[in-house]
Length: 113
Image (cartoon, rainbow, N blue to C red; front, side, top):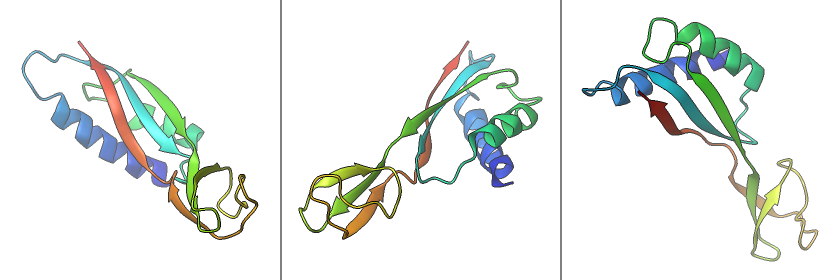
């Protein structure tokens, strides 16, 4: 379950970002997760509760924002959204697509008090 190690990495970033003076607690963390990132959201949510125990983010709300899959079509030279890596181009129907987005996962922001 790689979601556990993802949460451990997020915890490190959250701890570093909240180490400043005046931050008592992290109340929410928003993650952007691409369609092709290979993240099982329910497993991530489960791991979140476990990994954040004892940190400033214990009990914090985890919000996941879905990002679309994107690709460059070499037939029409357009950047397009795709649902699956092997989908044809939704604009021209071409099959020469190079995925160029949707595999990322990043912390967008967090709320603190």
